[in-house]
Image (cartoon, rainbow, N blue to C red; front, side, top):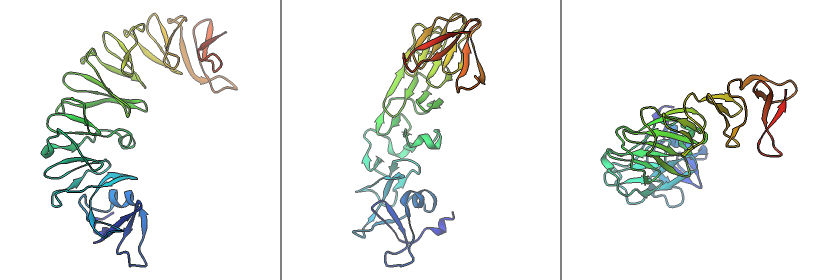
Length: 274
């Protein structure tokens, strides 16, 4: 949508943007995120519909905050995030972030759009911030390894990180050169296998592959991540057939003698003789 569509004066009242003047009977009301993300420049003037005072918005979707005491001329809100900055300060949803280098502060944009709303990251010339918290990662070398619905693996020149909406964990024992993401929540390096931020001490990383139905195997072991257990099965013949069993939604997973499946009754992996 062309920027020229942005009206000279717009209002925000009770989470609704109003196109045009409040006295205009032909005004159009839309959720403010539509207006802010698509139609107007980053520093477009917005007015409080109740007080008629100019405010500035930081945030996205329905999570916005007016930001007080900003430098009006230099204020910038980073789209698709809760971050903003002016000449003097950096902000997260209207609150000042402590210990940030504001001139180099920017939104970390290397996350999928849908995931940015669950985990917001920013960086300056020195550090990386999860929301307003400094996670002490090297911003120059910080990058995404892989992401899924459970969280994200990142790395910089020194460490591997596991980060989601609830916590940020540094994995100082992980080997940077051999660290590899395998499947949702599972990764390995030359020394260990990892389930999110935890080491799976009994599961050897060498030759580890994903089979389906949350089953993994290496040369000697079969593992199911849902039940977090090593399965007593023949790893040499264990496999998962992508074709579902007739009449069920289950994928056939088994070795030469048995099928293995998740039991809702025992919450463990049960087996059926072939």
